[in-house]
Length: 396
View 1 (cartoon, one colour):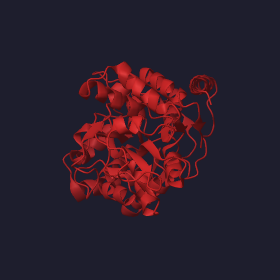
View 2 (cartoon, rainbow, N blue to C red):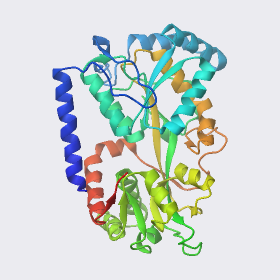
View 3 (tube, one colour):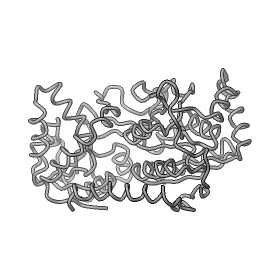
View 4 (tube, one colour):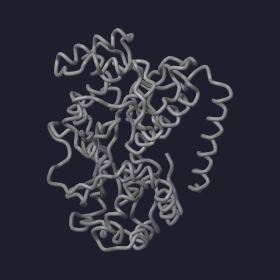
């Protein structure tokens, strides 16, 4: 696999699709294994929103009315009013998400049980959701996403395109401050951790630092294909805290990649670690490690290499939401009751009030999602250079 060619091809496909949409709007949307929202029909209310006077996204009259109706309400009174408004919108909500079905489906089922509002769930990769939302906006469709819940960098891209509505909710009060933005909020955290196969790496041999991880496991290391955000966050850390130049830090990653194998997908990488394909893997999602540990997989990750890199997965209201009350109701449920449910699903909640989550004793390094947006081409390009050093990519 040639990463640069793949990336350029994806960009070309995106351009062609958008051109095609502009010329001939489709009559149906892609199907989803979890149920697909009704096919959108063309209409002005689905157009890309224009910026408000301050340069931010415009707020629709419908959403303004919802905020006015629940202003000052909290607790059960607010929830009751939002359910009333959601039922007046038709009693359903379209949710686009990148969260795996085994996690997003229990969440939406719990929401429906608590509110009697049905969820039309569309699940795809964050990049695919981003592309679909952009396509729908370009084609001036209505009936698409009401609420959007995807990776932080992709949420930032949607925000920069003014495709997220202003967010006004007391539910963000308990969310980690690093995860609260004007138009979206973190709902859970992707925590990147190194892990190792206990049958191949003894506790004494386990990496204690990133320097150990990148220098002591030549030919025994697994890395993930798309982790440019993890990579950029650590490079900046090495420059700021370890006295390295950027070139020295990038070279350390390149040297680690020589003889390593690169995997397309975090779940696959962690599964291959558990099966013995790798001795050590560099950037597993913590929740996937915890899930496999529940199944008695021979892997370990503690004590963790610190600082632990953390990236938010976000949720927001679509700027073109046809059902803004339903979207706000769903968002508030996710940021409140949903936080403890994420723990049951081995996810790391973003709430400081959830009954667990990110260990308070860990040194944490949050990804700067705004910087990632502004510098994406640079860091993707540098990480592609790292990946090339491996010479091999294992695909899904």
